[in-house]
Image 1 (cartoon, helix red, strand yellow):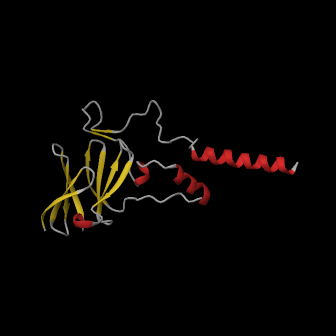
Image 2 (cartoon, rainbow, N blue to C red):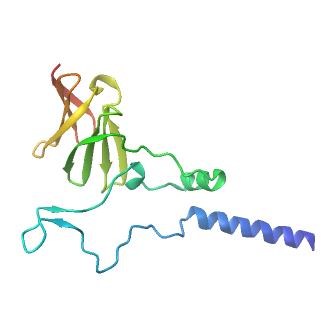
Length: 168
């Protein structure tokens, strides 16, 4: 009898673990079907700005892997994401949102279509000192970052790879 009880408990724990790893909970963020995002200027004028979403950390775009969920289940930790400290400039190109952060001294890339997140200008020859303004050459796919402290403009491709610097 003791063996059957132990086997039942083991199967229950295994099923609970599988349910946790497969993410049986809702993804969240679903809106009511009547939800209309805020726009500016309001109707009847043509909208020039439409609210899409809010970004606070890498968790806003990056999906949790099965290993991340297992770590959360085993340790109870909520996970560690890279958040925004002092965002300054914003630029968008084909679903990628670039945000300069003057405290972290880098540019954060939120790649919405690919569910990815990347830090740009954190190391190497393209290291940033105090990134402020951002601009994108949409024809060439180049991100330009005005680095205030270094007194230069640094160019990166759309994947965050350093291309060149002007000034400094």
